[in-house]
Amino acid sequence: MPRFALSIYSNTMAEEKGLNFLEEIVEKDLKSGKYQQIVTRFPPEPNGYLHLGHAKSICLNFGLAKDYNGKTNLRFDDTNPVTEETEYVENIKYDVRWLGFEWAEELYASDYFDQLYQLAHKLIAKGLAYVDDSTSEEIAIQKGTPTKAGTNSPYRDRTIEENTKLFQEMKEGKYKDGAKVLRAKIDMSHANMLMRDPLLYRIKHATHHRTGDKWCIYPMYDFAHGQSDAIEGVTHSICTLEFVPHRDLYNWLIDKLEIYPSRQYEFARLNMTYTMMSKRKLLQLVNEKYVKGWDDPRMPTISAMRRRGFTPESIRDFCDRIGVAKRDNLIDFGLLEFCVRDHLNKIALRRMVVLDPLKVVITNYDKGEELLPSENNPEDESAGSRDLPFSNILYIEKEDFMENPPKKYFRLAPGGMVRLKSAYIIQCEEVIKDDKGEVTELRCVYFPESKSGSDNSGLSVKGVIHWVSAQHAVPAEVRLYDRLFNTADLGSIEDEFTNHLNPDSLTIQNGFAEPAMREAKPEDRFQFMRTGYFCLDTDSTNEKLVFNRTVTLRDMWAKTQGKG
Figure 1: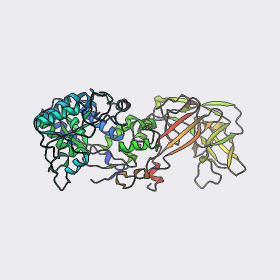
Figure 2: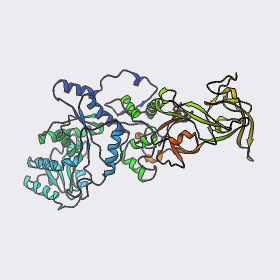
Figure 3: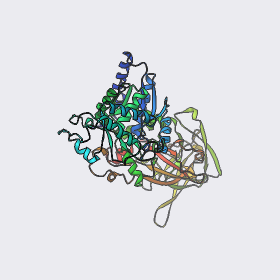
Figure 4: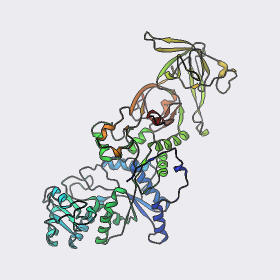
């Protein structure tokens, strides 16, 4: 299918949106009286952490139900005991609630194991399922190819009585893993290869996270999914496009089992630039230590985005902006950054943090210290202000001083003046260097009449820089996160995806923060003035604060890649 980049700079997102195709289906079904209430479900497998692709599905399923006064169930597709853990279940529930949604019922496919087992017997009794002793390799050969019909299994014509007995013995644990499977009897020449006698049950002698050792046979996804939907009365079972071939089997099973006629609908999954959305490959990154866990802020998991400082509002806004499509496309990661910048600009407290400090001594300041008021957020009057301690020794950013500046350079230079944000105008009078010729200290004078808010100095300067008082500064580790991958379209690569990791996805700097940052709590969001948006990380201690960069103030990635 075609893939295309979606630029955040286009007017596409600003256009008035009509109903998407799923909303059209729902409205038609409700107006016709087909349903009195719509029921959707979000059915994650608890074998890993949710990522942004799941966030889109969550927003879609819960959003549809909310818009049309329906309900959404959270149903865990826990049919594979080997890969599923309670840890994942709890994290998924936390993520859904963090995004702002609440489910009608918390359900599990394992709740229906007894019912599914009886439904499988019903298929056997109808002559529509059989126990097969073929190996997985033999079954793959029997399937044929897209251009060549398959061949029947030698076990396909077992009697109903024999299949009933063998399936019962499978449940009783008489056979080893892989010794037998239960297959639907459909058509080995079907154009849809998934309809060529698909597997319904397999043997797995493994302890399940909820049912323990009660079962040693487990339903395949295709058998558990549609039947669970039917049991719950799901009206609109919404899946991503890769499940289009599965719809034939979904409908066949509902028809042959004569159960509630749930219907499956498909939409385009979320593909984003510079982002890997495969749960299997994300697990590989974790296991092979390319990242520091599922919640490493470089990961696209919801827990990682939360730790990095993204807000649920910004993720919901992003999902709303990209809409619901019938074709796969490639969404610019910059759109998500745009959404979080827009939200953080409104809510983030402004703070001064110096990442690469240069010492400034104000030689004529003799007040000891004073407190200067500064706004917490100019976008929000209710945020109030805080007092900044000011003294004769400060830290500024090294990049805010240049010994031999070009024309139109408005920051600090020898003999030059600049305004300190919320404070005074200073002038550089002396530059101190070490034995290597590196600038280590600036000696400046300040102009007492130039105080912010009451300036009557008559001086005019164009540059404004941030600073912290050295005496009051709080040591801080600042983690500057960037794209985890340096290839935009990871779906188009042909080599190992780890070859495309960005070696500069994390840079750590040790700087100084204003003292108000001692009050920061995990998930608090801040704008470090002139630097970017940040949040306090869970690695922080009383002795050392650690901050994660959520996003830069502007889109710097395109510029550094030569695209800006």
